[in-house]
Length: 247
Image (tube, rainbow, N blue to C red; front, side, top):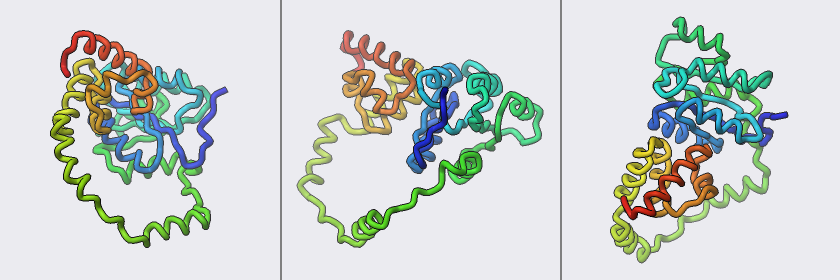
């Protein structure tokens, strides 16, 4: 009884890659379009997310050379078995040539298409537009909304507030600085095997103290959408808070 998303121009894209940097790059490239991007570092996390959701994703980017858990073609096979007759596009990301035997195996496992690395935003968007043509059509702007946008563009810039700018560096220094705060969050998440989550939380500007105070719902809103990832962060955060370490 599951169905694809029907919200106009609001795709849900699942990205599966065991490299935290690749996941972050993919998310940053595609989120600019206003799409929802969910990231998983192995097939197990991807399947866990899919069983939690009420609808299938609209599109999947899957890394071929997975070094954690199942191989890319095995994950693809499991996804196809799970989706059944629903034609969710699965694009395999690889550095290998189009005619290689390994990629033919991926095609047999259910891959819809291939994307050659390195990741380029234009090529990624091209694949999404190709396989989700009715989803990515631009939303027509109502005349009233267009006039508001035009008026905002023509309005003179608001004067800056020097007092706020003066105190900003002092506030950052009192907090230990953004770089330090982000590196501690990344260190914590990497230590529990969730480097991608650490990079995501750090990029969003969260400090470790803020992460330690989060509950499940807050972590989900912060972009940690896989339940297993949230459970692990909450469990280790409780231990860290109890021990008073790594503050």
